[in-house]
Length: 361
Image (cartoon, rainbow, N blue to C red; front, side, top):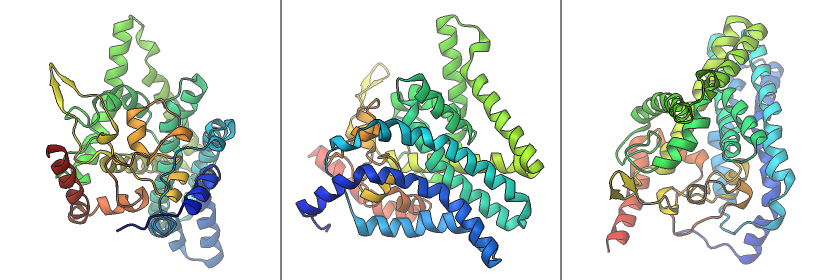
């Protein structure tokens, strides 16, 4: 049974929520900190510090601090929070990537591998998470910054597929990023990565055909050029190891995204209405998580139920839905648990069963 927060504690968390968004910059800071510790101590084991922090320390701190179910407050929806913080993530993340690749050749192979996995998990937070927020915006500047963040982890197809594919078909059999009950991330993630990449190209090709636009205006061609430019820069900085490292960290970041997608929609289904149509997405078709610390650090991504019901709503205005499916922990804990299918099913299936009984009763 969860403890009920006092009004005083709930109010304090709401007031501190705008400050929590700055916590996102603690994630890229883990990379130079890990490098400094490795140089200071002489131990390359420190290259795994981001992994230990993100999936060891953070889940524990998240659980201890607890939930934040309160609605948005006016102080959090400012230009500083809505625009400056997400925009700042682009130069910070690019500096983190190329700085990390610059020192990569100095490491033994096993430490370099752990370093790139750490960098990929940082990219999952900084590039994909923030890019996801920005590609939903109407502003071309926002969408461009979002696209550059996604290109930095070689997953620019997400910019197209997520909006025109995932949000259309979420919680149906047509969506590669919605996991069915009983699936494991080990079969789900490779399929999602492949199909979503293909879908990004296919959806943009269909758009050009419908509008009668020439092939060279294909958005994916532009983003592929950006990815190639990033890879060339990585090669100039660190040679062949830099190019390989650039693509490996991107693969880890994209796979992290799809594990989170696995968690966000696992076992939830929209009812078919006939003629290939489905009921409108509601908060019932995404798992909600309202832990204060991880929600601040992830720019409210875990208020995912409201996001799918209102895709254009900025993160600073997302609400927590108490009647939506509720995850027992934040994403930092749910991601490693998802990689243990028997444990994950034991944790989530009873919640699915309870919802099914309630809806049928």
